[in-house]
Amino acid sequence: MKTIVAGALGECVHVAGVINFLRLAEQAGWRTVFLGPAVAPEAFIEAARKENASLVGVSYRLTPETGERLLGEFAEAADELHQGGVRFAFGGTPPVAERAKALGFFETVFDGSETLEDSIAYLRGKKQGELIEGDIPQNVVERIRWKQPYPLLRHHYGQPTMEATLAGIERIAEAKALDVISLGIDQDAQANFFHPERQNPRRMGAGGVPVRSPEDYRALYQASRRGNYPLMRTYSGSDDFLELAAMYVDTINIAWCAIPLFWFNQMDGRGPWALKESICKHQEVMAWYGQRSIPVELNEPHHWGMRDAPDVVYVVSAYLSACNAKAFGVEDYIAQMMFNSPPGTSDAMDLAKMLACMEITRPLEDEQFKIWRQTRTGLLSYPLQKDAARAHLAASIYLQMAIKPHIVHIVGHTEAHHAATAEDVVEASAMAQQAIKNALGGQPDMSKDPFIKERATALVEEARVTLNAIRELAPPSVSDPFIDPAILTEAVRKGILDAPHLKNNPFARGTIQTRIVDGACVAINDAGQPISESDRIDHLLKEAR
Image (cartoon, rainbow, N blue to C red):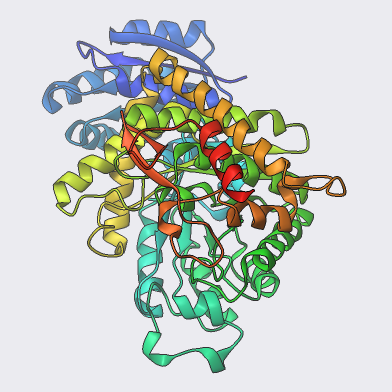
């Protein structure tokens, strides 16, 4: 194991950057020795010899003129080590870094503008500017492990024209802003890609980029082959699911599939299939990707949350999602957790809900089924005022870091006003990265809060009541009610799974009432009082008799 010795030179006491650098080095397989602040040049050299260092990291963040003199003296004193093959790297403010670079002594100079990928690649043997596609994993699970403890960053992106989207993807990739570009494609591409006769030219570009051929997808993917070589994924569509899946694998090397369980059909008006049939179709898609060892995300729970369903239904849908993914052969399951949904949910109750989702699904994990956590900010929670939206993005992501996500799906701060431009994405990424760095630097463990733990435990208990009610819908001939399309459809029809926004829906009951109480979204009775899940289910069963 190679050794890095690093510290702040001379009278400089600023060591946060040094510590972050050494943390990355440890993850890259280095043995690290931290010398601390205000290290004399002789102490640096002595430590490098004693520890048999392969690399010496020097930091200085004070006056450029003083730094230039001190670094010159250091370079002269360390020349013997340098000639002997020891490598030297410098990190400091841009003015000091400029002078350090002019010395010609340091192998590389960091001025703070580098991306995380730049630093990791350097520590794994690449010089600055030499990053190529093979240096960064092009498989999402491998990339998660490569980047830990930092989560992957994802953002939707798609402009109303191919030309604008191609240019924007190039900009995002060159800025190294994201690990995953989620192509936002227009509604005709989602529903009618293989049916040009059903497409309407007046709708072109409505909701995203108007892709109309496999070559369009290939061009978009090629635009991303630069910078930090981000992965790419897109919607699973609302019809012709398997045909789209095969094309995505072939054209954009799709990072993972995202598909709901109960949605994108006639129930929400986004697809041609009835509820039961769409569940069957979605299960076929899960199995197709599972057979190819491609990860699958069920973007299911937040659809209930966005329709003001109570927290317990959110937790139940998280469990049903994981159950179905496992049952249909998915090996790597991406559990999406949308915070701030419904928007009035408090941070404490939001976190409790996600902890409950993690707790109830944890027993499903085994050697063949791994759950990866993906968090995102609530789609409907952004304020319109831009500065307030920026603050909301940072605060939400800082809270999300409490559950140590593997992927952070950034929802841009412009969401309430317009679909993100490439510059919006780069800006949102910078804010997200800072919030993540702050959290990884020593975030308090909010999951230990007794109030939050109590709520999480209560949600798991209530979710088991709901799951038991679904189980009891099934006759003895059904081996697993949680993956049976007829039983799942019946659970919605009877109102066991329900949301206020489903009122007057032909597939759902839509009679549940909810309210934010003490920061949590709970079911209420006709008198406006919160009711337990047991009481709610009992009331439904009595009405059904």
